[in-house]
Amino acid sequence: MKRISMRPFVKSVLAVALVSVSTLSLKAQVMKSADLEKYAKERYGVKWLDAADNLKQMLTLDKNESLTYQQVIEVPGKNKSQLYVALNYWATATFKEKGAITLNDKEDGCIIISSTIKNIAEHVGTISKYSVSITPVIRIDIKNERIRVTYTVQNYDVLDDVSGGYLGVALNTDNNRDVRKSMGDSKRKADDKTNANLYEKQWEIAKHFPFVEKDPQKRTCAKALVMTHAYSNAVMDKIEEAVKNGIVGNENDDW
Image (cartoon, rainbow, N blue to C red):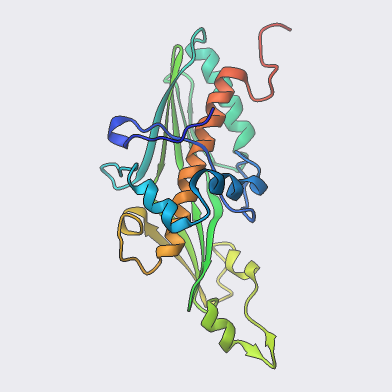
């Protein structure tokens, strides 16, 4: 199933599929990392600024200034218990890191997932090199013959390498030997304080491009928005596939 058009959150957004860069580190394997950036470019174009500006026309931030998508999926013939089992199977098979499933309530019919998707966008600027990750909150509400999926992201989680930009490359060159920090340095764990030039930041989506035109991190945030939007598509598609056809294709009562 392909979903390209979208409605604002307040009208219940029809969300769509996924992505991130080929260097993306994914514990939550919603889509193979090698296919992610290709997926986004095929659907939204190769120019991130134009793609983000186009998406702005279709997106509306919710009352908390978060980017939120919501979709109701009809599943005729399957009751609440059957849908819960299928969704619990999908969630536990997909998001394997500890604590990713923050709520799993069969009686109330609700599953909530919060899982970090690392390095969805990277950009080398004049001074800094940015690496952007997101932690979407995915809520699945379950009733007889239908589910509702809500996907929300409020912030970009940013690793800012303040000496990793183009100017830093020039300043760190010794006898034509580039001695700048490696890309691995900018992907260190958040609690690693060994490199004083690396900083953790949060950028609120509502305060950056394309929702704010004059943005010093315009290029970084353009790609981050497109990737965030694309990833929502993959989540919705995978959930719909799981409840309608199973995740391996042989989940039925005929055994």
